Every structure is written in structure tokens, then in C-alpha cells.
Image (cartoon, rainbow, N blue to C red):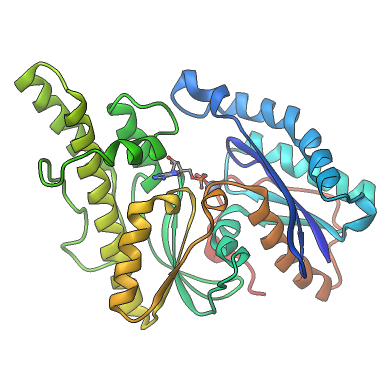
Length: 346
Ligand code: KG4
Ligand code: ZN
């Protein structure tokens, strides 16, 4: 079976075709970074308008790349939430309309389930059950995963998401949006130990996170440095970036180890934009190795938003939907806030 996947929840238009025997047949991504760069963050209305311009041309390109016509498809999956409501509505309306026009089942997909299942597009597929750390621009969650749709939320951020903290701190360091990858590059030249930031909420039990204080600690360090030396030189920028990244990575690693121990599991999955971070991957390799387990993550291009993960999650949901007699409902709904643990088990 083959399915088209459409992702438009934020600032990337991602389109892909997934085949349940041959894997991803074709995928394309259009990033709106240039559209939002001048504003230092995503402008929702501009995001929606750009998805309107890009979604259908990209679908045509993806089908042409794979040498397919709509007759070769068995369903159309689209991200229905969570995300920006206007951006979501573009993918939902195009996805639902194409499914109607092509006489195919339409499959609404949860964006974070897409991220969560993205490591399954790789050769070494994690077996259930496992613990998943979902770290993106909008979410930081630890989830116990016993199967598709069998999700137990173990902990989440009480304020900023990890990616959001990367982006806000990067801005303080004068880096362009989205700052996560740029901050991580800057940290490569940083010296360990010059700055030391807290590991929030690690000194008490529990699996929740808080990252907003870390951003404030960074801002204070920068202010002190400027008061002392009247400027921030290049090395100081790199040293602050290093200490910030080290604090985020350590905090995530401490909570991942705690979650694995609490669930008595050894398999850890990491997904979402921040899972592209090399330092985080290396640290979690060490943590899982010490526990005699393994860490699984998607290739870098499938860590950040993409259509492939929506096509893959959509295929799992399509099969369940067909078993239940398919969904012939012609309405569609964009759900900007949508808890992951409310999804139906498959
Ligand atoms: O999953 P994603 O593409 O979008 C959301 O669903 O939010 O994640 C984007 C986030 C941004 O905050 C971005 O700065 C961060 O992921 N990110 C990184 C890296 N690559 C992307 N953060 C740290 N290091 C990276 N290499
Ligand atoms: Zn995402």
C-alpha cells in the first residue's frame, strides 16, 4: 500500500510518499526560514500563506519524482495537529480535498506521533516497548511507548520546550532564527568549564522539565560579561553556547536515565528537531550503553519537520482505519492543542 503524507503544521511544507514494502519512495521539503528570518521567529499568517503557495506544487513534484499518479495511492495523510491553526488548515483542507477528488481514504495524523515513529523509517527499527524523548520547538516530552497509540506521558516541560530554549538563547547570542543548529555549531569552539549553568529540576524526583530558567541564567551571564568587559568577544559567545548546550543535554540525559530505570526498559528513542543535536545523541549513546541498552533516532533530515514521518504514521493509522471499515467523513478538523496520550491505540 502507498500513502501520500502532507506536513504543514509550522514553518516547513513537507511532502512524501511511503510504501509499506519499499519505504519512502520520494520526499521533498520546503523550508520557510527565509520568510520568517527578518522577524526572528515564525509569523503564523505568513506561514499559512506560504503553505498555500507551496503544498500543491510540491505534491506534484513528489509524485513525478516517484513516477506515480494518484491512481497508485491508497490514502492521503495530513497533519491535523498540534501546530499553528492556519498552517494546519492548509494541509488539512488540501489533504481532505485530494482524498475526496481521488476517491481515497483521508487520514488525519498527530504531528508528535509522526516525530515519535520517525526512527522506524531507519534500518534498525526499535522494538516496543521503549521510552521516547520527544524534543522539538514546541514540545519536550518523555513517553512510555508500548505500541502505536499506546502512549503514557511520563513527563513534560512545565514552560519552554527544549528547542524553544535553544532558539531564545541563540537570539541572545546574536544568532538568526532558528537558532538551535547555529548555537550548536558555535558551541563547537567553546571551552568547557568557563561558565556553568543549572540542570533544572534534576535535584528532585519526577520526570518533568523546565527550561525557561536556563535561558535567564544565560542572559544574566551575558549581562555580567558585558558589564565587566564592556563587550562579548567571539570566544565568550562560544563558551556561553557550550555551557548552555551542556546544561540542556545533561538535564535531558538525567531524565532519560531516570525514565528508563523507572520503566525498567533499555531502549530509548529520541525524535523531534533537537534530536538532530550531535552532543545530545552522543550523551544518550553513553547513557543507554551504561544501562546495557540502545538509543534510536531518525536520520537528521527526519528529525526536524518533514512529510516522510507523516506518511509513515499515516500508513499505520490507515491500516487501522481500514480494519474498522474506513473513514468516510468528509469534514476535517485542525486541532492546535492535542495531547498525544489521547490517541486511539492501534
Ligand atoms: O521538530 P521541529 O522541526 O519543529 C517542531 O515541531 O517544533 O523542531 C524545531 C526545533 C527548533 O527549535 C530548532 O532550533 C531545533 O529543533 N533544532 C536543534 C537542532 N536542529 C534543530 N536544536 C539543537 N541542535 C540542533 N542541531
Ligand atoms: Zn515538529
